[in-house]
Image (cartoon, rainbow, N blue to C red; front, top):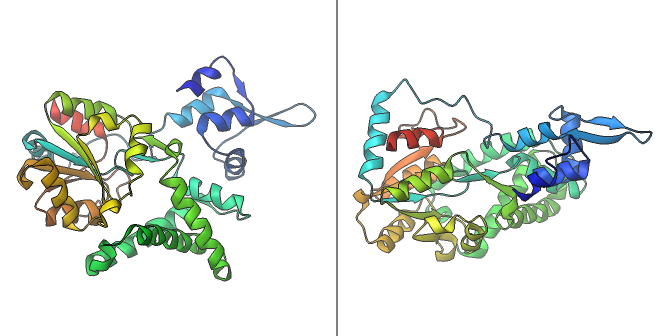
Length: 325
């Protein structure tokens, strides 16, 4: 928040100031201009870029990612009743983190494209995001069929995501002949995404919802696939104080949807499955995984990726806040 007050009296920002406010590289702003996402004014004989302060601030205030209108699923009032019931019944609420409590900002595609750009590749963030979703769906299908995909040692997890990211980059424009470089960039993306907390933003009303749960006497915990860096990551975001414990599956050679990770969370909480609710954004990892451990899942489907799946869901945290009142 300090960055906002630093330029609050300026109507025009330099490219460096705008990039600092948005926490992106200046090249990202130039790319957004080429794509029509953002416009700039050109001043002086050198045609230096200047950005309207209000335009930059408005970009930081958008929910992450951009989603459909903020409204409940009116087509299924019965589901809302069920969601309200499980919210009030649960004494413990487990949370996924990535794309449940927070998301990469300004987008996953932009973060990947920015890192690839450093290595000489000008890739489309939109194409990257489309390829990410497609590959993730393919790998999720493999998780259902293959136990080894759910269990891996920490180095294998790192290599898993490096290969995953490399395949996305290749599908998005890097030549297959440059696969070794794609893997190297994939590792850099992995380390950046799971280490640099400034790349992330919490979803709208997340902290309001966490505070309300705590006020109602519920205990909260994190159940994630990340490695042991997750604890320090949450501390930097000052979210760790909301949770009784943070369970990083990578530190135990466990990854969702393996039910053993959820069972370990139940053991740490010293509760039975019917006392827990798990909130996550992935159908395979967070819904099917929780169900295997007999925990009620609640899907955060902000982008409507799993609209046809049979499970309890919500699209904005204000929906849950309203149900808790």
